[in-house]
Image (cartoon, rainbow, N blue to C red; front, side, top):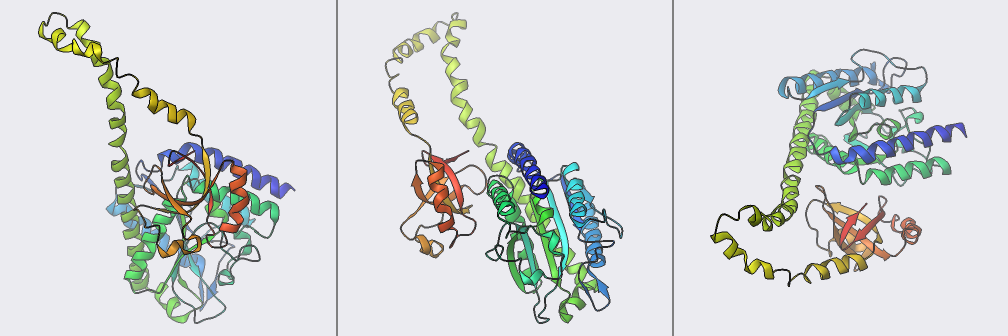
Length: 398
């Protein structure tokens, strides 16, 4: 019960902070927090005489140095720069890392790890973001067996799972999309190196759960695979991987900046009509100009078309908020006949929203949120990240 209380408290705190800070995500990247996974009494995976904690630290320091050198406007914060741990309790240790990131008011959190697998033939790179995979209801993926299970939330526990899933839904409106964008950039640059691309995975990781910013955990290779181990412990391999991560950071910084520039011009345009309305009253102060009153005499008749704004307000008053189940978001419009929608063929519709992922694709039309929520489980069989959204006049509302 105490454990659930702690989790619930963390959830409430995160919901409160995210609700305020989510609007500031696209205001530029000023602080990047780099976390060297494990450390001290938590060595992580160990193979061939190498400990994961040391590889992670080497990579973290090299990445931070490259960012500091080439992006002087960005502040780099390290969770650790030495061989150490923060607590004899692993959960407290992970929370401390997140606390460091939150206190620094980070705009991006990057946790660096190395992977392991029972099958020594498994190799490649992958990046994790906060979420839930299909296997979470039974056990965390065996592919991460070398890492301490305490790093993951136990999704087989009904109470814990409910709270964590609510947090994941909240991420869709806050940092979730940005985390996925960063993860895609990372995997793109890994693939350019010729590394086996294992893609992006969603996992209920405690350290990602507790950070109030876009966050990723990247696995640079499998220590259990001799070829991967040789690569990630070599100077050449680490240099290439660090450069890939740096390029991903550069792409992400540019992406966020572009998002800000795209969203900023649209705001004053909405306000322009408001600034033009008082111009009708200006002739009163400009009476000495004889020509102006004459030109504005017809404007006295303008009140006659006033019924025009009335019909505009009427539909808004009569239209109500409806609820739907979002299954996908995209930066660009996607055809409703796209193969990704085959599981809900003919039932998918597009709605719009603010932000870089302005195209939302959803199914269902419900008068009550509870009715939509009752159908989420069924939709998640094909779309694990599906969640309920509120829609009014074809646009997502909060």
